[in-house]
Image 1 (cartoon, rainbow, N blue to C red):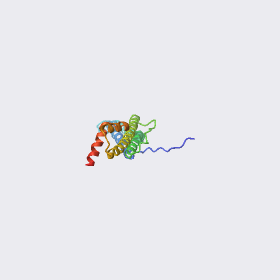
Image 2: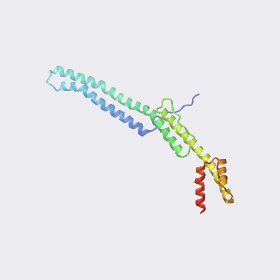
Image 3: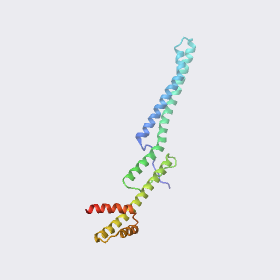
Image 4: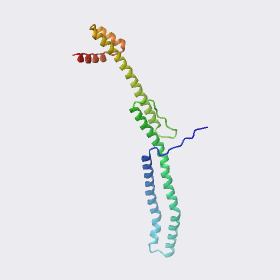
Length: 197
């Protein structure tokens, strides 16, 4: 039997509620303009010099529209605000995961990857984030290997230098055996020679 998982639609409450309120504000403004356009001709008829029978007809239309439109408009505004929460959930969820992955990487944990749900947005960005973390992790592994090689080389070189039996050929052979390039070897020798003075 499948495990029941409760869905939390408010992952980033501040952002999601902000966009829901913006949607409600936009729809309220739109509705006010629309209602003004619908009601204006009838209100103008009420206050004009037209016959009383036509004014009564305009008043009947205003009452009919007033009774029918408000409930529908308020319902649409509320439903659109709620729907905005569902839509922003598909954006807020991935951004939460991106933030969490960035914090993990910053703290040195490279084990986590982003796995988005089917309906979420930003799948391509998640793939790029995962590739970036893979590349950083691989680079750190290579740096660690190079560091260990250089450390081993430095240890053997220090032993050779203490015995004062070191020729240029011996240094080059030692560097080649340890997989250390000549430039790194010279940097180390300069540092070692400087520190011995």
